[in-house]
Length: 165
Image (cartoon, rainbow, N blue to C red; front, side, top):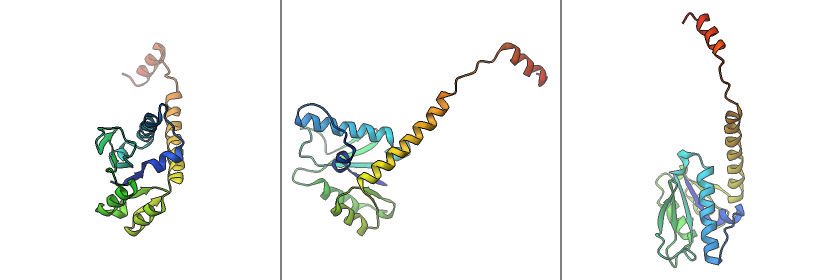
């Protein structure tokens, strides 16, 4: 689990907003954030990412742990905060120096630092993620923008003769 994200903390920073009534809007915002992360993270990183949310506004019947595009999504148990669950996950991590914790919450940052995990504020991490995503999209666009050049039969014949094929 090299990437542990404080879900609502990051959601607040991104400004991603779902539409609908209060509870469905929050659910739609969570889904939009998860989709954004799935589209933005490198494929190798998605399976090593855990996002933690409070369960207070989670839809009834939603499991506490689920997968979304290879990422693990966890909801704190009723009566437990996401912060407490994140602290537990940090404590349980067997290789904390390899863990990156994304949160602007000072309590979580202190818990991560105590275990020597890397700490990145949600706003800083979000800005980095946007830059990386932009770079990837630009490099993909460069490849996509090259129009396919059809070979003329006379060109093919020329090169076949040239190479004596």
